Structures are given as C-alpha cells and as structure tokens.
Image (cartoon, rainbow, N blue to C red; front, side, top):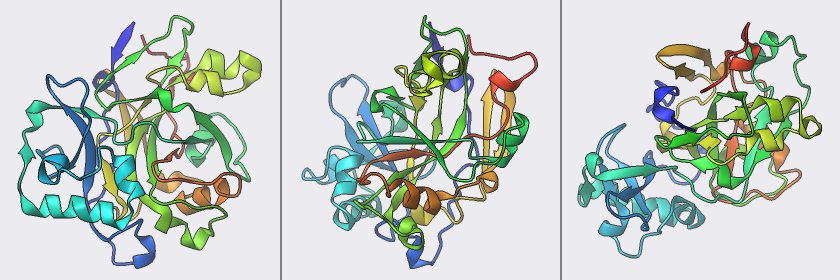
Length: 301
C-alpha cells in the first residue's frame, strides 16, 4: 500500500525567515537561503541542486548557472563557504530559473552518512505518555535508505499494522567535527528542515526486543524537506510552531520551545561518540499527538 505524504503531513510556519546578526549562530557563511534538490520532469537520473527564490517559488539551477557547481547539497556543504558562496552568487544573479511546475523535489539531503534521531525530546510528549523527563538525550537512528522526498509516497509495509506519524524539526551538519563544545555547536549546523519520523509501533514497542531501529527504518519512513533553510534564515530554532495534519485534521500542534535538549546540546552530545560530517541529518524529536497514545490508538492506512 502507498500513502501520499501530502495527504497527512502539512507543516506550516515552521521556518522563520528573519536573520540573526550573531556570528556564533552561523553554520557556514552568512548567506540566508533555501537549498533544494530536484529532478526535472522526464529526467529520472540527474539530481540538481537549486536555491528557491522564496518559499514555494521557482528555483535557480546551480549547475546551469555554473557547470562546476556541486551535484548534491551534501557535496556543496563539503565545500564549506566556497559551496555556499556559489549558491549565493547563483541566487543573486536571477539567472537559470526553473519553473516550479517543471521539477520534482527530492529530499534536500540524499545519502547522508548518518541519520541521528532523538527520542522523548519534547516535554509535552513525555507528559502525554506519563514518562519521566530524560536526564540525557535518548539517541537512536534510521538508515539513510529510509529518506524520501517531501511529496513522495510513504509505503505502508505489509509487516506492520501500526504505522504512525511524528512531525519533527530536523537540522543538517555543515562541517566536520568531534568533541564539539556546546558553545561552538551551532557553527556546525548548516540549516534546518522538516522531517516525519514515520514509525511502525508494533516493531518499535513489541517486537525485535523493543529495540527501536527496525520500527523506524522501513523504506520511505523518513520524509524530508522540502528545503534546507540555512541557519542565518532562522532567528530562533527553539521558538517555531510545529504541526502535523492527517486527513485535514491537525493531530500535532506545539512549539519547538518544548524541546528538552536543544540543537547545540544535541550536537555536543552526539559528537562525543561519533565524528559528525557534512550532510549528517538530526531529527530532534516529536511533540504530543501521535496516534499510538490516542484513545483508542489511530494508525495510518
């Protein structure tokens, strides 16, 4: 079975476009942009990097503007300030604009080295299940193969009858680091996007020894995007409205101020254990309203 993502997950007002002047907040350069990856209709092979002219507007094709430009957002981030400067110049030129109707949006990051997830990271989500507030981040992961585009279908696996939604703020690492200090951590963040941590609750909570991985990492269980909004465009990532809509009904509605462990704390914590590299994706947890804790429980069909 296939479920259209757009039919049940609509996220609005997630990203503020206002800039901040604090240099310590900047992930890489000072350029505020909305980076996307796309394919032109009729071209099933070629991945292109683009910059949106504005939310939901037409896209500047970086490769058309500069044939030496990277072929993926991950490669662009690996170039550091040089890569973002290329994107900034393309956007400022106003050239090589592709009509939105002519493209298929892909996730803003493909094939990251890591997809790091955080469980139980919203106070109101802990309260809805009568769970204690964690004293340290609860870290798990999805395989990168779970990532799918923001408007692609989610495949309901025949192995699960309890597939659930989880709207999440996500961020993407912009430069390599290990043992990162919390006060420096935001400078390692390239930008923010939206994710859905789709979860097979039967496999997460009842089977596989109650290890979360299998229930979280079925193919297509990590819709991501549409855009990677660079850090300078987000005034405060911990004061953003976040919500999920299923069949026209708002099922999750909260604010990222409810996050227990903020962005900088998560970067510092995870970098104690593993080296973070450009393109790594962090899913920062979900607010209340998931299907499994409803009475009776509600799952996707």
